[in-house]
Length: 465
Image 1 (cartoon, rainbow, N blue to C red):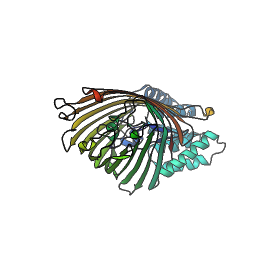
Image 2: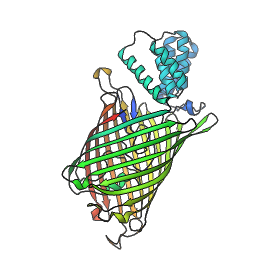
Image 3: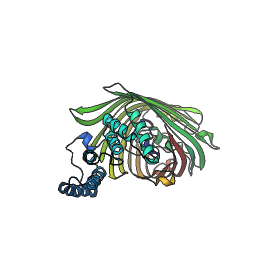
């Protein structure tokens, strides 16, 4: 699913990626940023490589190499195996030794440039890239890799970076709700709130969503700012039209002790404005703190805390919305684990406490999300790719703190939901990907009016620059 996460800065690795033919470009929405790729070598040079089939293959090749250290083919095979196992520094060392044995070995300088870029050693990456550019007999694929890396290094080393992402498409819902298409549900976030506003009948809608992100590197910290927008038109049901905008900004700091990188932290301010049915529905302001840490090459962890104050206005589908004015405290934790090459398992847990000023709608909510994504490189002869397949399951709980006298003065409302998601993205060009998502949600409640059963089909295109 494309991540549209209003109201939190929790970050996940390789979830909701725009796929280009040569590179993966993270879709950045509502403060949801892709975790940086940090190897174990970049975090802690002494971190052992996990015991996997790939690492055992690398160990076996290394033992062979000790008996025949000048074997060029064996050196190259070991470098490939070490990189596949996640031991990037060992791979770099072997490739550099390979150049001592054969300084014209094809493709090695470009491979070294890419590996140093993964370690954020941009000076070394630029040096090897310049050497790779001077090599003769480059095929189209090599030239494309050089161009992509040149652009990546230009962005990574610039003090000021501007990226834009746009997601446009069409959606059908069997029980249409105001939920933004492709949103990721986080406890206390705006998308979760909008899922509770539904029409009770099927409907089509067309939508557009986008994010403009600016990062300025001051040296000691980076200032990250995001401007996000979403707009949808429900065909034949204008009361379900949604318009939303958020701005969040704040500094990001690296947390280091000597040469040990512990992670990074971002403190931020945010402001939201949401319209529903062509009327003002919600305004909010808040602040938050996010933390992320690469544990080792395969595992990253991230967390956030956010405080937000919401002010509602009555609309056609929620005439008593102003009773929901209040404060929201939300917390979240996310783990991302690379199971296999280009395959990532993610677990996200978030919890929110909503305290309405009238106490009528005060509640607590919990969201648990388990997801997996797998990237499949496709043959260059197809002219498209890569292909990313993803799937996930949500378990969502929500319970009011007290009875709502407008519904039943003796009943404390509680809802729980199962949500299944599946998606596919196919890179069409370097900047455009086609996207297809299926969402199945079943919401049960002790309040009959809160029950819903909805299936979403979302077809769209993602553009990233």
